[in-house]
Image 1 (tube, rainbow, N blue to C red):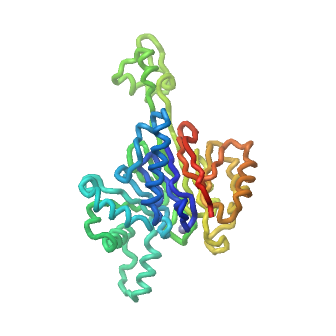
Image 2: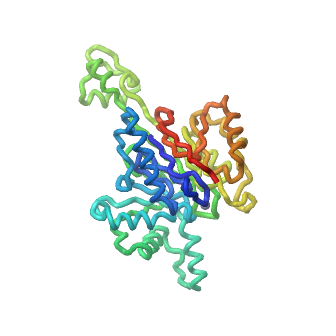
Image 3: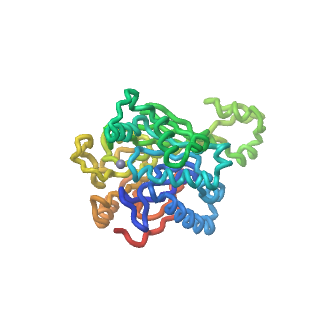
Length: 359
Ligand SMILES: [Zn+2]
């Protein structure tokens, strides 16, 4: 799993840094802020610099990130800094990728209930009396985007509504689930994105002279060793289970419900909220980096924490001090005020570029 941080600001972008958005395996775009097009292009340039100087095969296999490769846009909630760039991406599709997307529509994932605040506001503003309000989230978003970019959009995108407790499979080997993150009264979630694959060590299988036929399946599915040409072969001799679980909090204080949802994560991308923690629906927990790190010490599988927009509450010195404090923990922490590419299965940072000036 390759994770590229495109933006790490909260709420308001700067010329140097976009608001929260990141790309997983060059196909899954989490969040789509208003400035996504420029930020993505900047990310592409940084990517090219990295790939040109890297021998990393996984990175090279993914190829350069392009708009055309994005298969899914996954939105945690419909605040403008999280989805305001969607019309730009869709206009781009209409102008440049129409034929391709007619065959393979762009998938947009939104949480159930995420359009309700917009619908209710419209109903109020226009004094609508339609008793059918609110309509379903996907129906509303199709209609809304049709106003923005034209009804042709119905052919080019596919909207999926995800509910808490459900699992969405965007592609083989990947799964997405969500939990209410209490950022809004409804329709705002934290996501867990899992990549799981059984990988065959081809060279090892050849060395052990294992035939590449149904024998492989037999070894993979058997708990006990399988006899092959007089040798006992264990599953672990030739198969490796790859699993990476990424949690993304999506604009929230890290409340107990989200924390428990993240307990089996290897990576947590935590975007803390800008909203006042005194709002009734916010739980006053882990709004500072030090207490967050303390809470995460229990997480045995965690190896990376990427905090996003803690700068709203803390000076860079405070963030640095908090980072220094975790030298003895089992996970690393990385300041995301930089463009950043991370290879999760290797637990390595491939590239990080300091953003020149942070305001
Ligand atoms: Zn928000």
